[in-house]
Image (cartoon, rainbow over all chains, first blue to last red; front, side):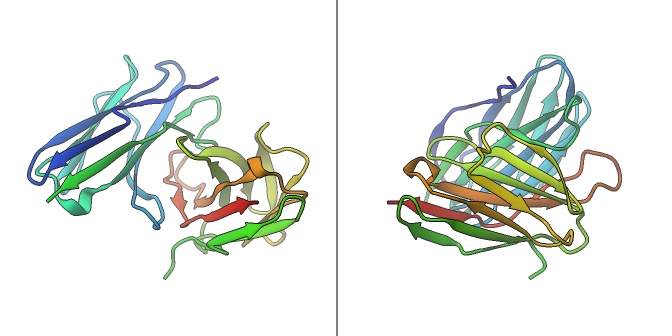
Length: 114
Length: 116
């Protein structure tokens, strides 16, 4: 059974603070790691698809890194804003399943306080 | 809006009733996925179509659940004889299979089901 762990489960930060979350996944048979942002009452929004060890991707104030050998990815948010408040999900696919079922973590719920 | 759409957005039903949800994927996507999210959990895979063929089903998908994608476009997910444990958010996603298997899955807003 593939297990994806995210930490912390939730956190509250002040506007302007930078923050980061962790996603841990099985290091064997790695295929891809996806990050999503899910705001309440909206569709989960794709942030990044990461495939290579050492990958680093950036989208505005959000960036992510990937270590497939040790099985973790970090998501960083620089200068958090209230609109960054959302649940951040990571999802893993193994080489066995290709890009079919994504195995999701439980998410990190971020609240940015103005 | 050319994203993934789902209908209805909310459904309240009584235990034992049948419900059906619809998903319209992004038009050029040939892959369509159904996931379910319960409180405190991440989305869990239910089933997946490539065009009209249902290629994979999770063990979560009991025989009360059936999904179809008759013309390779929209899909329906039916739950027969609903139980309180079926209460969840049902998410649909679509992707292209072109360019290899690492394509982004684009999600709809979900259908929230409450079984009383």
